[in-house]
Image (tube, rainbow, N blue to C red; front, side):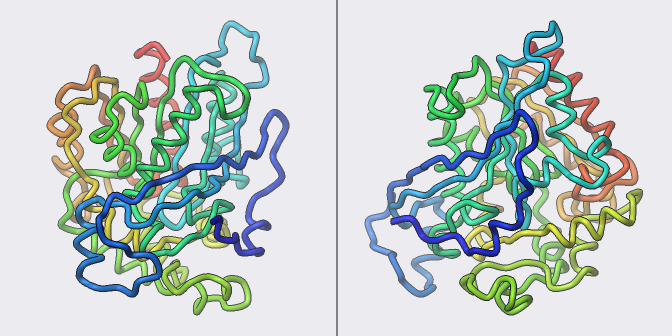
Length: 356
């Protein structure tokens, strides 16, 4: 069964630009527990299953995605044999990668397409225009890992966008990066390279910082807009909470309002589970890049980052190559800060150096 997408979400995505196409991709998961959890209310058994990285419900979902191709695909600069798969953070959707406020500065999709890279930006299930299942039992981090694995297998087989790519680079922000981290543990051969934005493995400030975002049930925060959602779907209740969660240091004040107006949802299931997926990936052997703001209090274990990002070496001990960049005067949402352009330059340089 495919749970329905709230009608209001159809207005959140702009029409696809030239050389882009919107896709709806079926992805499936199979229950990994012996217990039956369908339509069950929250209890300790559910918590233990989620902590154990279990899939609680078998289902098939539709994952919304946008595939954008470089304009000059026949030029010498094109890198069209490498697909960048872009995975957003919690309370975002695929549109965060193609910012319409000053896109020449902040749009990852535009910059990467200009450099010759095709991009596939996805809505995690329970976000954007993807299926909205149970926000506790289904829309949780292990389900994100399993559905991304299913998607990547379809990409490898040429079932997405009508062609196959030689190489796949997974680019993730926040919970998207955590999903990439856990995918590298569970399926180390899925992707050829990984780019992480806005995470470390220091969990000491994660939940205090998360709570400071002042999230609540989206249906209560804006009943006219989100009243059809389950109470397990949540978002920031105030601009101040969103600002604390995402911004610090040097940024354009106008992009803060853009971010507020385009914010999406988190789920209770994701909030409970995401720290369980900050893991070691001992068998991933591709190159890995990590970019983080020096004032990302969520993942820096305090007001400023210190040694936390360098845990990357221990978490990916067999990686082919590493690059760690810490951006000054930058908070959690790196791509919406003045350091956005440098983040893109550094990533492009790293990918080129690694043959992508």
